[in-house]
Amino acid sequence: MFTVKKTLEISASHSLKLSYESKCSQLHGHNWIITIYCHSKELNEDGMVIDFTLIKKKIQDKLDHKNLNEVLSFNSTAENLAYWICNQIPQCFKVEVQESEGNIAIYEKD
Ligand SMILES: Nc1nc2c(c(=O)[nH]1)N=C([C@H](O)[C@H](O)COP(=O)(O)OP(=O)(O)OP(=O)(O)O)CN2
Ligand SMILES: [Zn+2]
Image 1 (cartoon, helix red, strand yellow):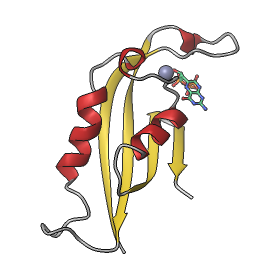
Image 2 (spheres, rainbow, N blue to C red):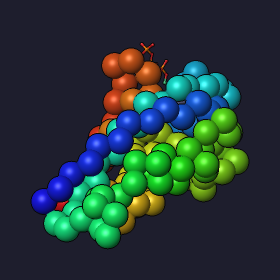
Image 3 (cartoon, helix red, strand yellow):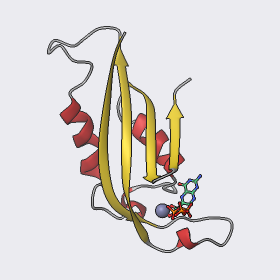
């Protein structure tokens, strides 16, 4: 099994819809650091699991310098982002989303 790991950064704004009062319900921004793990038993014809550039493009084109509330149909918690990102890339099996230093969510397929 081959594994590739791609780390990229997304600068964006969001506000969270929460069932309790929170500063996070106000529009604010983060520089999310996202680590994406992809694997494959065999390499493609180019000798890759997946092109690092393609991983970055798929995620950054949709999210970078955007208001996440406008481009995503779900509450953009780190957990939900990790889940959504994992499902954008067929070879992906794990995603880590660091919202700020010390605040990290991880989604991993069963
Ligand atoms: N489990 C989660 N908890 C929280 C999330 C989340 O995505 N998953 N998100 C937020 C907000 O986005 C909020 O903006 C985070 O604020 P931040 O200042 O980064 O974190 P803290 O409030 O913990 O403050 P520290 O500076 O880290 O002490 C909130 N929770
Ligand atoms: Zn936030």
